[in-house]
Length: 329
Image (cartoon, rainbow, N blue to C red; front, side):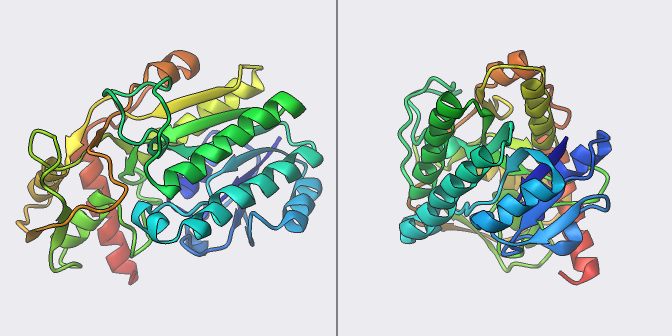
């Protein structure tokens, strides 16, 4: 069985490729346009094809030529404030092109599809931890663009028998514990990454976007999931589908939240650096708090986190930033 990984040169995709190879899977095919990914982040043993996942002809050729029967789909635009400023760009890339990818998958006989979804489909949840049965009320075009793909998957599965898993990520952080991969995009907006950059002198200060939310310290609360734990969830989902398991929509998180200020304190504690922090206005599209209920993924997939420790996640992120500095970016 050959797996096609869209966005496999990016942050989560590159870690999942590592997990596939570590698990002894046959060489995955990585399709990435390298807009935010890097050639060097694709592990030896995987094949990189540079191109657009919305290119029907290219994807069809890859599926037929390599005997692809499974797709893990990561490729997407992911910055919430950018989606507010450029909704049509997000609907084109995240939704319209995903529709093309699904249509090509069905036409070419792909059997299983694992989709990179997001906690942003919930918007401001009525309760935390949020379960998969929470009403879906995304507050950003990013969240809406992903929710529409979930709907397309559900309808496609019903009409064509495509087996799928949609994994709703919470806040992804950290790096491969073996130092092989990490969040490498210099302009990435992930809190732990930018805080690590501030601790290492790569940023003059760190901005906190809003301190007047209805949370214990006024800053947003998020559930931070380590990237290798998340990558393993994809393999667990793939095995579940291979074994004939039912289609699945599941949260990926630790069922524990940390505020922005708590994360900053962790970065300062682990790095030993007291960098400057500035309070800035709220960003559009940011819910006050969102924490994963993870009972479904634990029960259904037997998924068990291995790196559920904020300071360890921060340590991994700092170590990776140092590696990037050593290689010149």
